[in-house]
Image (cartoon, rainbow, N blue to C red):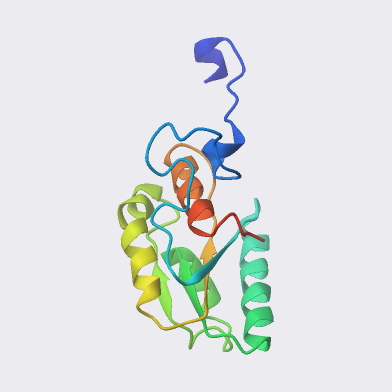
Length: 150
């Protein structure tokens, strides 16, 4: 984009879902729009292998606190995490495919609603790369979590 516009493109923090806009320019820009009633945290990491480890460690930490946990993760990540016996019995909501974030965008609001149907204490969501539609997905996930992420 820099080459196209010959200027640095800066995405404001509120557009990334890292805070709230001072003035809501559209529905969902300022508040926990479409947020589930169930507490949600978003696990983010730039490196995929580190993300898998962080997701596993986060799940184990909350299970150790005797919380009922569900995962909102991509199909690829589910395949990785199901290798761990402490995780493969947990409820899982497949967000879509990490390699095709449009599938995540298409199912995101249904996934957040389905979390409330699982009767768990906590949902742990997988963060994705903030590129293209990934920026909008992460904005919605962060807002749905009340800006709580690890």
